[in-house]
Image (cartoon, rainbow, N blue to C red; front, top):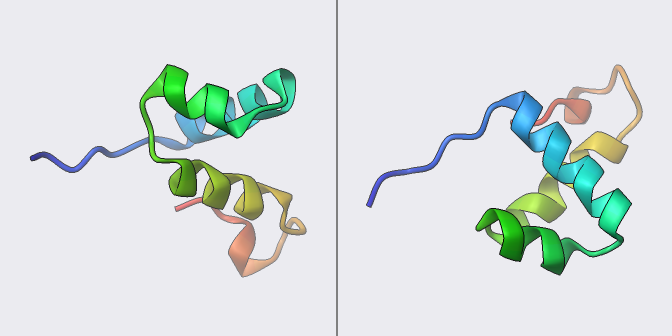
Amino acid sequence: MNKRVFDDSFKTMAVELTHAKGSVKEVVDELGIDPSRLSKWRRLQAAPKGSASAEIK
């Protein structure tokens, strides 16, 4: 199985989509990604700007 790699623009779009739809589950079902991965992206984007943890990896 190949490891999927997501670029920053996809991560940002996915996080914004969760805010627009109001549901992480709906977005992960639509995009076919792991819920814990999307939750991590949301948490990292919510971190204060300038902090080391604010970067999405």
